[in-house]
Image 1 (cartoon, rainbow, N blue to C red):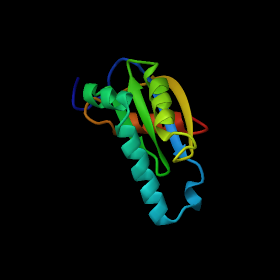
Image 2 (image 1 turned 90 degrees about the vertical axis):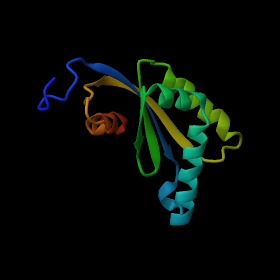
Image 3 (image 1 turned 30 degrees about the vertical axis):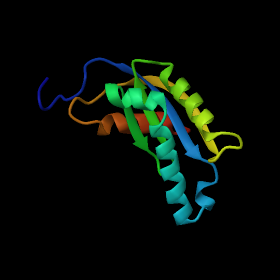
Image 4 (image 1 turned 60 degrees about the horizontal axis):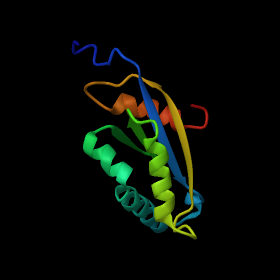
Length: 128
């Protein structure tokens, strides 16, 4: 692989869990900061998030009013993570979230995750 060619020559399948906070834009700036901090703390407490971070098989994609978690290698990891998040939120939910899961092919940059993040963001968009 040359400096000009930082791309993996193999297609990988990315498994994306996307979460966004319902009604986020209606919250005050202080509330938005608090809600995102709560969501981040909750995510860091899930087993799947911790496993993904430790194995470096997961990329976090901040999305303003939520987050995308891009898992590689384990197609069930985003499902388990979503279930762990839902359980941690409790009843009634401390934060109202929309969650969706998508899988699709990506090429991963060897030197940076920026391009992977761009593709992952496209996967998580309504039109991606």
